[in-house]
Image (cartoon, rainbow, N blue to C red; front, side, top):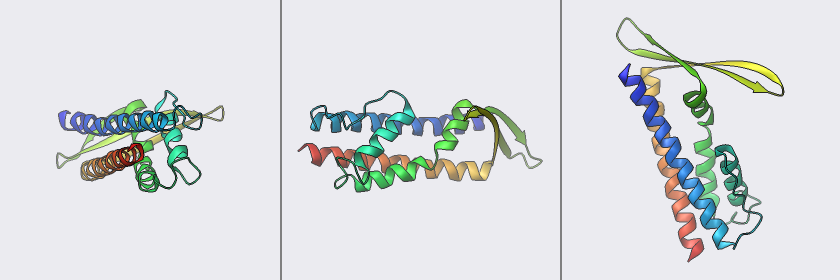
Amino acid sequence: MRAVNDWKAACLQFFAQAEEAVTEALIALNEIERGATEIGLRHYRGQKLEDLGNAIGPCGLFADKGKMASNALMDFRIHDNLRIHLAHSVTYVLIEGSGDWIIVFRHLALQDRKSRRETLMIDKADAIALQEELRRKTQSLIRNLTNLVKPVGS
């Protein structure tokens, strides 16, 4: 169904925009600190988010100036589970009698050498609200990271 695919694509785009902003912030913070080993520059998405959290979190090199960005990062990371389902789950679409849809995500995860099956169901109304929340949190994260690296580098 096109509406479901459009919704999934929009959400994935927000995650991609956030990852790009996180990567750019890490690069900028690393340049400000002239290659400080405390600024992680790892490859994978989760590692980048962790590296940024370490740099701008309470014990990080940029803890004082990074407080707003750190809060925005924590707010954004609330949606990590959604990204996992969007990117890695088998998706089913159910159509209600009213014509509205429900998305069912099924994901088989490995954790501590054990398999765990997860199921996530989102109806159309919740999906639309979730997309808007994700959009706002993505914009907030990007804005706060941009504000962080501009004054710090000045």
